[in-house]
Image (cartoon, rainbow, N blue to C red; front, side, top):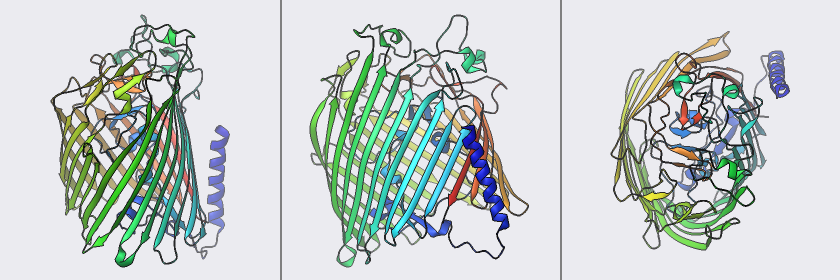
Length: 618
């Protein structure tokens, strides 16, 4: 891996040297503006919006998806680990799901697939390495076969390392890789459009069970040691892991008839495979993280292996009439749960039928709009409604849904723990409003969100699913303040959470994210950004994580967070090559030697991170 880092630096040096040799009169024909991509959600809504690859330094330093989203998730302290959202997240459809979402941040989302149109071959190389064993390599290559036909390949591979009970800095905790192959085609008269993607994902998490409690070593936050690998052991023996493997095929096609009237078709096939293995389950079952009675199995090992298959077929028509976008569709969905370890946790082939549509009005300035999307099951038992308003700084959302509980919560059995329920559909009503104000370089945006959860389902302290019979009311008061000047930028997001069910729905009362950044240009060509992030969550009794179920569950004793982390960074750009350096948790040791993000799971200690992005446009 050191050799690879050296190769990147060497290639970068050669590129800079060659750039300096070029004559000043040399003109660059191809670049970010000659590469464009579209998103399916825009095509579906009749927008011809095209985007260019991001070559700016803004937010380039951010190291992973949790940091990109201001750490508004609970995780197991390392990149790629099981996580759950702290705040409300909208769903996109009311269909029956499996209900296992611990790795959902790292699984495919067809809304984010990019469909390119390139004038010349486009390649992007991305590499990131951290001193704590985190390594990421991304590769993109896109090329038009003809002016109307494109093929694209994306490959992503990353690892993060164990921070406790590891013999070396590169012993893997997370092993993730995915690739997708996509194509898009438009007919010469632009009446026919086709988009298609095949996606594969393999996400593996080694399960350690968190820190092992020892009589002679306190794990209280005030007593933590700085060298985690030296002082702390994991609760489990080696060989325990959870894996998700996905294979997805997604196609979209539309045909324009007279007067802009269009018909469209969407086909999705999704195959999920979930595997859990503990080769010494009888031994590990005595540990706190399993939270079960010690269990002796006949062959000492536990293996769970099941798959979830979904085929979805959607047809509809859409168009634009007097400034309004309209869409109507019907969707047929088939799903099946196959199981190799228990006949009880199995669902034969079932079907669901949905009718839906959307209606939106967009002003000449596309940032101002009113849009509503809805989908109802044929029985009208389940539905989802999502409406949004954006007008001259005012933003509003009204979301309401009734969706089935996941199959996992209704019926599960692995020979050690199990249940059989008949839960009602989950009811959610969410309202959010915000108003943005600007005065010169100052910005101010207060937001108010309120969420009502009915028939809420959770895993209790004994790992049993419980459905509430009362409404959970959660209110989020959000204040965003910013300063944006040519050489200086600062922003702060403050969130106050108020709710009526603190014993069931665990939230930190306060969340704060601050960013301060300076930028300047050195020698007229080198753009440099220097800044720091500060993250803070107030102390709270977050849900515990169950490796056996790959889910979070309720606990009342172990408190996490309650500290601030400071992450200084520097990023710069030469020509099109972007580089960033970051020191995560730089303030470790000033007050505490660490903190917990989940019960028994430590946050990643102070670590240096290097990041480079190199686009090639010809």
